Length: 556
Image (cartoon, rainbow, N blue to C red; front, side, top):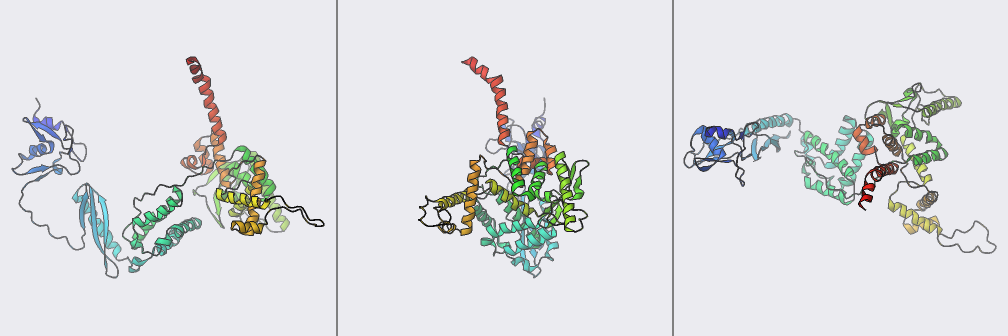
């Protein structure tokens, strides 16, 4: 028959940091229990007695603070009426201090010295199992503070939030880290719009989490999407890490920060259908012929706007019907692609022939003007020698003209309502009859543009443009043209959706588009009405034709 010690050991799991009792437990305290000589004994007390003998009178064994069911001797403590322990010697000045604030968590405190001689306290929370490990973390923390104390400038402690963010974005993020100026400008506008008015004049060291709660709450109340709020968080999380390193503050209020739930209801924008892309491209050759071929190339390759206008003669491999994408244009800069990788894009026969015609046309333009053709010309250029690319913003502006012609501008509902109201005022009531003997154009019977602008609190110019926009929408609706996304980005999404709907693999489409499969599925593989209709018809044929209908009829 097994001994009591053997039976005890059979109920202990010693595989982890805590040696857990697997037998019966106290339902309230979580400590283990077992019966010894007819009486109930706690498992951790019995474990202590197996090694050390009976517990002295007036003493008791305390269970592990982190795991009550643990019976590991090192995690148990004997208490009772011990003799007073000698007072621990006071820690050496500058060595820091530590305090246990929870199971496995310790708060470290170190006093640092600024360059001007003033002191400041620094805090850090670490998560380790034992006091010895915590003291090791404290020693490392003290060493970090001593190394940085000599480089911390006193003036950094009095920098305002606005000044610090400007230094961080433009000196560090843009100039030192090499982020795109356009991206940095967007970050700065977000800061100026939502955070600068209330926090900009405060010192960085005085900023707290409740202050950011209030600002993000204002963004939420304004109806901003989660992505917009996340953009702001992506500014300030690295900012505070940088500010701590610069000596401007000792705390990061953005650590573990949770954004509020957005009240923004996003409107899903689906890629255009084949018929809609055909209409867009056909109209482009009539209305904006200078960018029509850019849009055709975008629809057949799915390239980004900056990549389209950045194509040069050296990018073409027409004998292989292939195009190598190596650069993109941003403003007046030519830079690497967004993912900083090169890729080859296969071309169909008609697209390859179109690019060959464009290159020959650019060569003829240079000869006609009498200038030397660039050594590596851009295919889409306003320069006679094709030495500079067509600006991406020019493409966007011309696409806006195209969308306006089709009556598919992507405008806010309030803007559309205001333009429709302007058209209503422009038409007005039936015009009065022309006076006898009066010549001139036929009376229109409505308000003038100046009167419309005054009535709606806008300018005369706005009224003129609003009436034209409303008339275009009206004509498009009468012609049966429904609203769709006609942007360059929409063409990129069209390419992805069309290839995925046709059965091409996600990996193949992602490679062609120049990003990862996850990005493709999340942002570009959107459901279109035609694909949804095909899915419904397929499921209908399977269900009604094979199983459900016959069974239902039999039941009747």
